Image (tube, rainbow, N blue to C red):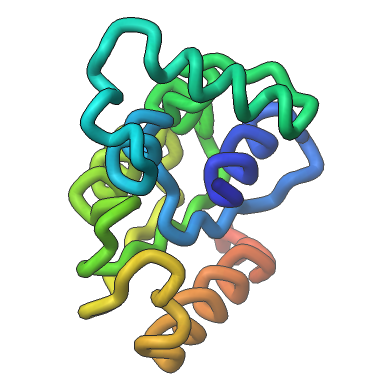
Length: 152
């Protein structure tokens, strides 16, 4: 859930210059339905809220399902550069859902990198060369000084 937290924080923090979101989940239902015993029950009314209440008790937070819906969040990232990294074999943060987050991101300074065969939390370990290049290129462009326009 680190990418979700980074994207949410970027909306509120003016000192953020860019975000690298590795395998972000689109919403809470993605996690609960794919990675917990509650998967079969995730469509039942109130089930996701009960899961969140249990999580809140353990973490000291107070989250709602709306807090974990990333589409409204990425729509607020107007000019912030964002690099999305997704594993083509990710069964949790599925690459087609990451692509939707990418497409809904308001910033035109966004990138999407697919890592072949990588599952969740495997994007770096499967193809570190692709991963490093994507991150270094993103950070290099992020820190590059804008070119001065020549005047005649």
